[in-house]
Image (cartoon, rainbow, N blue to C red; front, side, top):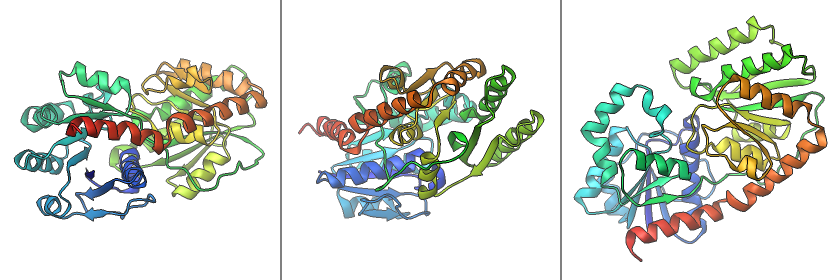
Length: 362
């Protein structure tokens, strides 16, 4: 089977979609399929091992003639360049799959809603309607497709985790709460600051706990939000408790996981949340919100899956901070086992290939 994956770009700063698209291509290649990756906008070269066939910013029609794919897998929506690729696929009668990558979730649709409503009316809904299948990373995302009226077959498979070849815990004096994501209002960083402050006011023993924020800022909105977060930290007198690390390469990021004791992602909306899977694989108990599909945290007893908001986050932080070290370690061990069982690329590829086979009727 020959599959061409298409994404706007694979910039490291683009977050989960660029990483997971590369991981999917690498996983397909490892399983013996012929998988290609095409970035529509010139940028980074592939940085995930196993992506052996890559095309950067070439005319899509030429790549179709070169690769002659049996199926095209699009990652993302809204980008008009992706729409042009869909038009070519329909004209050439090539089945295509679209992975919206969380961009159809209610929170995301509310952002710049007028532009998105116009895009849906002009082209996006038609592109989605005529897709051979839609790709969801969780059942909750598939349900959202149905709520929006799309009746396509749905391939449901989570993102896999790209893990380092070697990993060891790093001993340290202070305990660390770790956040890894974009510095964006959607991610709930201000809520984390307020929840930490609330725990402190309730006499929860926080003197040995620091919060490390590992994050990217790719836009003016994110830089503005970073300034708000830093200002609020200062107002609350928490400058010595919050570490603004900023962006890290993969090696340094995994070192941050290795030196942390607890991972927190207080997000409003995620279609998956790859950093949650990474943190679990690193052996960290996790607190995240019901804006993510991570109900596994409760069933596997490896973290807290909470309502969005400051108060639920403060209560979860209190419980985790007061928990004996050994109990947190057991939670982290269960999280590592969960990822090994369900979120390796080997398990993910099986679901994706079954979806492709249904589309191609093979």
